[in-house]
Image 1 (cartoon, rainbow, N blue to C red):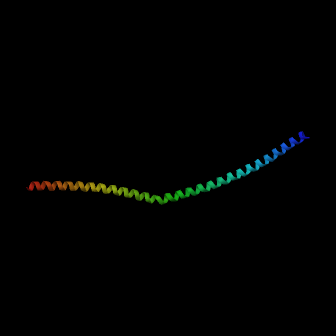
Image 2: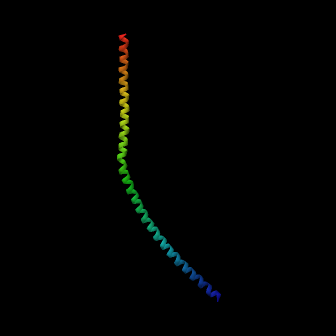
Image 3: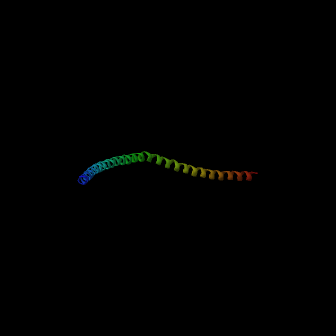
Length: 100
């Protein structure tokens, strides 16, 4: 009698385990599909945010470039003025020496 019941019990267990695994696999696929949708939405939100931040920061980058170039221009003008004043001072010294 045990020889007849054992194969039946094993087949029933195998069928039940197969059904449970199929249900788990279907749920896992559903979770993965939902995760894919959430990741797409998050990626779109991040892209939009990045575009907005780039749009906000572009004027500041332009302002920074302007300030850098303006500072460089002031240094050039300062150098030119010191060169012009140096020539003027040298001329004044020469005039003083000639006057003595």
